[in-house]
Image 1 (cartoon, rainbow, N blue to C red):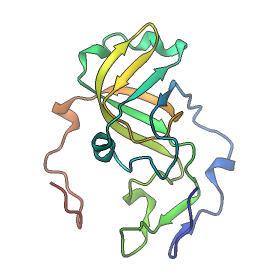
Image 2: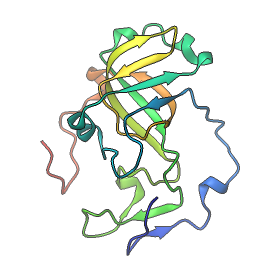
Image 3: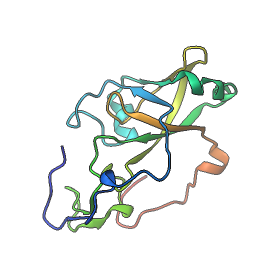
Length: 168
């Protein structure tokens, strides 16, 4: 699913082959319109522009954690990008002139392929565990690790920058 590019470097040991040590559990899965990497938006801005919405389906044991979430206009979703390679430590993005370390990129290919998404909460049905979202930038069936309310007062940094990126 991921091709190797010039300048990229792999880890000596693939983290996917190591024994688990964090006991992370999936609390649910994302139902999205995206079924292939080629059609999946690369970020949440592109997902919103593409339209379509998405649903986070929370598994029964974790639905008791949902009451109160209806107060949030937006949520932070941590997903497990299960199709991404875990052994790529230096990457050469298509848009970059030089390879970069994985921790300086937002690529899904990383030792622990955790995705971070901020989505608008469109609807919530606690009984069925259905959380309707305005958009998502992951493949259909992507596992979810955690869900948190987004607090604009503490989560947003208007002065945050990345040198060399032109962003409004």
